Image 1 (cartoon, rainbow, N blue to C red):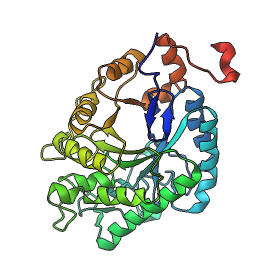
Image 2 (spheres, rainbow, N blue to C red):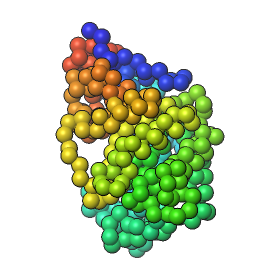
Image 3 (tube, rainbow, N blue to C red):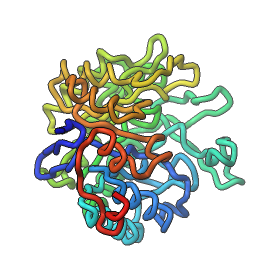
Length: 353
């Protein structure tokens, strides 16, 4: 039987062999931003497991852009070498290596989850965080509001990291503008109280994301796919909302973005989210329908038939799996079996097919 989940997706010069993408997921396992064997095995095993696209975790464009001390980074040339090995292995499995470039803004300088997810001060290796305004994610912390020079540095850092990502061999690039990190902090009126050209109106609040996009495009090849991940809603009164997400997505499409990776939340600690299977899919559907752009659906999508239905009913074009792929690296192989679809397995594994 033919399956939509296992049909190819062509974006620019790249053909994804199926619609299964591995979502960027922080591993909190790097040192000084450098990738290591954990990242190679983690990302590589999802490629042998049959996913068409593997997006590397939020990779910081500067040291201060990291969430934790253990985040991956691409702020210096020395970090490229190990990533080259990772992208080469992913490609050897007929999968496409992608990277998400990010800056954590006010949500930076925390310990990794298994070390308590606590704010780090300078004595613990932490650093001063930056944001659009002097409003902390929690009440007990105050980031520094970025001045014009600080904003230009962020834009320049994204540009430089993009150049390194090209050299490292990534074939899809995603700009992180979701989950309460720096771009999203500028988008949301709950975290952005600026009175200059980067705050206030919708046009001003999206300015940084647009300027970062334009800087990235000066280094990213025009024939390779470019994604932007957004939070469709803040799940909080007076916050960034679906209407604004659709308006932004229309502008991003006009400017050459190929796909909107539609997530939600993360901007404020008082968000109220009702979690249920596929709870974010309606956002991807609305963005796709109203902005006329390819979308990726994420969030509590755990079963093959569920993913298939999202695609066949036209709600999204790509399914991104996060926690389910942590539970099962061989998601692609297993879902093909569930959908009675024959796909190629790694030669080394064929005797188990």
